[in-house]
Amino acid sequence: MIASIEDKKVLFITTKRLDYIRNTQEIRLLQQYAADFRIIGSNEKTYFFRLCHVYLRLLFTSVKPYDTVFIGFAPQLILPFFAWKFHDACRLIDFFISLYDTFCFDRRVFSPTGPAGRFLHLLDSYTLTHADFILCDTRCHGDYFVEEFHIERKKLSLLYLAADPSIYHPMDAARPDCAAGKKVVLFFGSMLPLQGYELVLDAFCTLSARSDYFFYFIGPLPDYLKSRVQDVSNLFLTDWLMQDALARHIAFADLCIAGHFSASIAKASRTIPGKAYIYRAMNKPMILGDTPANHELFTVDQNTAFVPVGDSHAIADAILQFFGD
Image 1: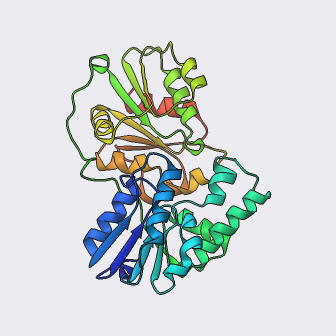
Image 2: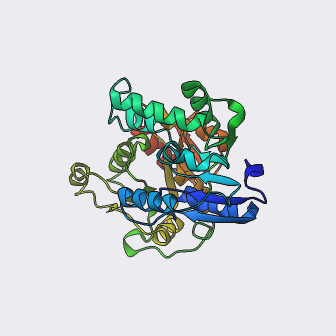
């Protein structure tokens, strides 16, 4: 993979916000290895407008000066529609997610055997087939791509996720008064089903009577779950935080919850949660789901505990065990 960008002129394309963890990681790689590079991306708030922005810029951008076209998130929305522009360049893609897997099995929006599911499978397959090099984020994920889409394994390169060290690093941060003197446990997420966020919330509620604990749950929790925990006095809820504020909250936490914890979504066992990389970069103890992907990078030690997936009581017990309770 490095050979395709080292000392090369690279056009980097992404449809995700430029400050997304995978984008910042790949841009750092380009800064380190590429002779020169240009970024086509957008920080528009909605995905539709970001996609429109990227498409317009691509239509009026010549690819001839570039040795490599590096497509980050999500190549399925770029390569099939602009392959005619890229045929003279090396095509490197980051196949961070399968649209077929995500929408048919993770989020369960479409049936895998229905028209939409078959189309997404075709889109994934076309994208993988027409790439020269493919990045994947875990060995487990790469194995799935080979088995499901019958791609050549020699095309694959492994690139584990990495937190942005300019934001996420060991630091000191003052606790709010509500958490002062308490055992602080933190979870954040985007509330995707594979994260098993309901299990984390259930674990926090199980320990709601413990006045010596304080829990932070950060992310856009559905309203029906917010109403369920409105009387939990040792739980702080917020929809989201800017990255600098999130880093400060992680810094003052004693223990962080990573995941993934879903037992019903296969993708949860093939991927390492992005928050695990952030916790590791900040040297914070964490609880992980006991999955094959997590075991690729992490082992049991004083900063890392594994729990069975699908079990909120196991998460609660691991919290108590961490604090010796």
